[in-house]
Image 1 (spheres, rainbow, N blue to C red):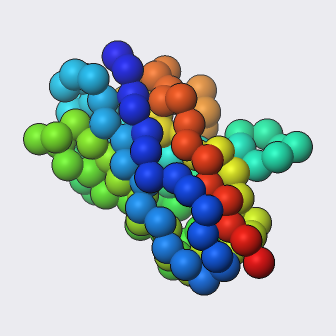
Image 2 (tube, rainbow, N blue to C red):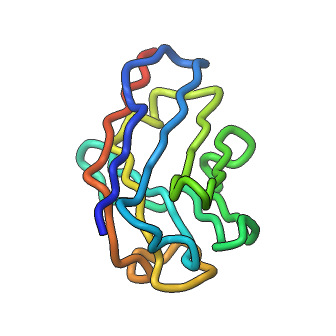
Amino acid sequence: VQLQASGGGLVQAGGSLRLSCQASKRTGSNNALGWFRRAPGKEREFVAAIGWKGGNINYADSVKGRFTISRDTAKDTVYLQMDSLKPEDTAVYYCAVSRYPVSGARIENYNYWGQGTLVTVSS
C-alpha cells in the first residue's frame, strides 16, 4: 500500500488549505483513515480520524471547529480541510491507514503511512 499526500504549502494565518491523500489500491475502504502531524522539534501527534463508513470522526482538541476530515471511498482518498489556520499548525502532515474499521488517536492503530506534506502558516 502506498499513500500519496498532497495539498500542503505556505499560507497566511487565518487562511485555508485542503490536504488530500490517495491510497494506491482499495485497501482503506474497510479501514479507518487518519491524519497526524509533526511540528519542528516535536513528536508526531494526532489530528483527525474517520471511520470506514465515513462516521466515527474524531479530532484533536487543538483543531476542533477549524479542521474537517472526510473521505471518498470510491476514490480511495481522504481529505483534511483546514480553515482558520494558525502559525502553530505549521507541521508536516501525514495520512495513515488504520488496522481497524474505527480508530482514534493511537499511533499504534495505524500501519500504513504516507510520506508527508509540509504546511507552513505565517503570522
